[in-house]
Length: 321
Image 1: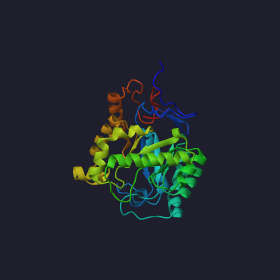
Image 2: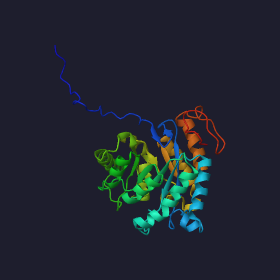
Image 3: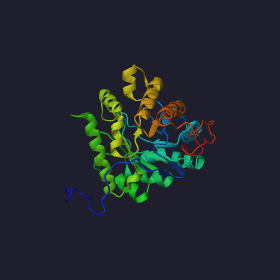
Image 4: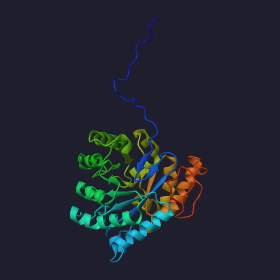
């Protein structure tokens, strides 16, 4: 007796079953997703960062020198990559044109590339022209904080240059019927659009966009169900560092939100976050490493190293603490 007919895969179709993302090579470093949590250090070349760390406000006349000093420290403390941005994304920020944004970030990226030749660098921008110039200056990754918009300029550029693309969720207004489902759906559409533009599947990273187009309550709801983002099948970048949601919960200004940030770091690792975008690298590295030891049993493969010295084991890119 014949078995009941079943559905077969179409010719040349993938299985459609999500598996652990394949390792990603950026510059000369390999990011083995799931082996441990990676740290992205924030380098804000702005005068109006929400966290008060914008180098145009704090770095004095030598902004590039201040950026290099910050990047060196972050590298010694264990940053795996650096994220350079020249336009604040905080609510009410001053919009800058592409020429001004390039004047801010390009000298910094060139200096960082000369100083830290092995360090992967991402450019945090919404403008295709800025991203292209940043890649020419030595950046390796495009971080699109409006990754869910219909504009295909940045995905096309990422495809043309063969670089990874981070797609972050954002909305102009915090209007949702079901915030988790809608953020996931928006990001899935963004991934599909990037694939249609020619970005390889293994070159995509997703960011739920904590603090972008969401209320504090909505941000907490997303963090509560962060593990759901694994269904997208891509590495998850989590950016909670010093965010206003932490400030509202703890009633603290941005410079005093470290402990709140570390709580989101530990819980984010437990939920499967792959990259943490942070201002304070060393304490977050320690919190992530302890969380990795519990969640991923990673501590035997990645013994502690002194800042600036190579870490043992395959789970850590060479040169990271």
